[in-house]
Length: 221
Image 1 (cartoon, rainbow, N blue to C red):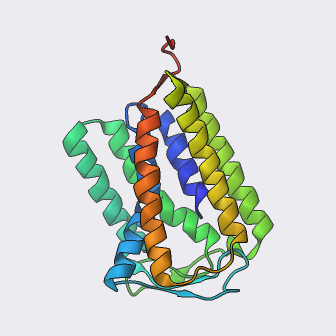
Image 2 (cartoon, rainbow, N blue to C red):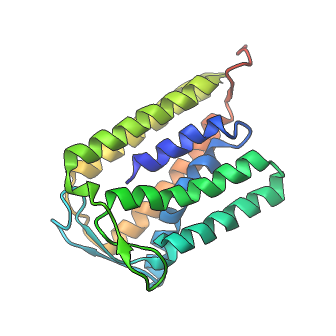
């Protein structure tokens, strides 16, 4: 799952309006932000295997430290407590913790049985990725709902808030389409570096345009 995780972050603004959208998006994406680093360190392993599922050419061979259920709780608690130590904002703390763990739940729905409960434990997955149509329907539906919730809760204060937000959503859709039709990646290194690059671009970008949007109850100048 890709844009489905972003959908969770957008929708989370309803429950933690004072928390930056950048952090609300980083939470459900957090396991995927750790994963490429762990690949580069050799702690986890993925294999390029066209046909592994109909939607993705990747075989997630070993990724218990970033993507097991137990470790998702660990990372969620660590992220949430770090946020609380800085902000003392309880709604944001709870939403960030839940957001991190939501990643495992959504991946469990989409992946074949390769999602571990804990390092060394059994793997699970419902295999939504075996149907391209169902995967696209679910993820696009989630993104539309999440973006609508965020847009209904905030108002652009200026051009950055308006067009920065619109451009962000369009980029997510474009990346999703490119991933759907681009075929297998050339190497595991390319997967890791491109995933890191996406995080470096998309998280600060969300912070940028979110800073230029106000709560919908506040009139724009």
